[in-house]
Length: 316
Image (tube, rainbow, N blue to C red; front, side, top):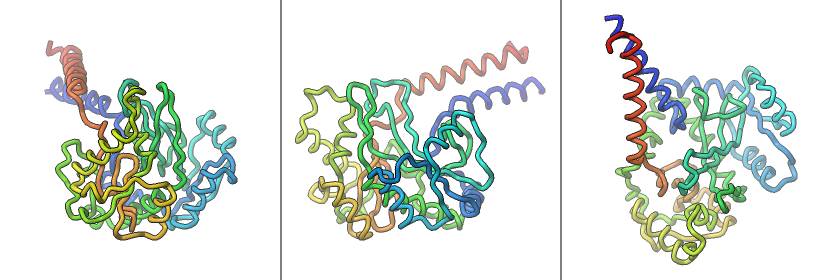
């Protein structure tokens, strides 16, 4: 019997290893109230290089306008980098608004890298730790397999509104459980449509088109043709009429966010948000999905773990 328990333990350990690097899509229901309470009693620390920089100024303006959960303060990027290099522990009652970019293993994939902001206790490699966090994905692109950050200051209002609203929802676990669940909405099979929103206007920027065309051959980057394909893809996945999907400037998106326009949706970071309350309604990443090769890898690793466990336990 002890051998069986040992095998089960090794298998469980192997399963945790296989999935440990996966990004959390939402916080576990058992963690939401505790996470909210921790953030509400903390100070949100924001690393800043230059407050006069347009992007960082837009970020701080959005925090000042929409953040209500707890006090916040800025810290110089130099000091923050020293903390990271020294592997300094996070001080008590401290959370960070932290931007990080991750690369996937297969760089030839269209969506081989992604950039996000996190609210987290971790000051480095947020997704590598087993700590709860909330996140917001940003658009980016690559040129010759080199990451290029896109200007996204116009999205910071939406981002901070979204993070603030999600945390407030965690204050009431029952309300959180009954709300739109990222776990249900971030699905590769797209069973949950947006038919109820079909009459609204959905705004998309050229940045998202650049994101959509990541790593396409240069001779395949015909703007008009790819824009048509992107709109067709969004319409098919959301059930929103193509005539209601509009390519606009960043300023138009920023204005819709500031006005909290109830008749407008925003598509960014391969996700659909409601401009009125910044709620995430749907994840429709054209490059996402668990591929057959990943299943083979997962099964192979599991088999190797089980075989090792059986050998170590004397069963084999």
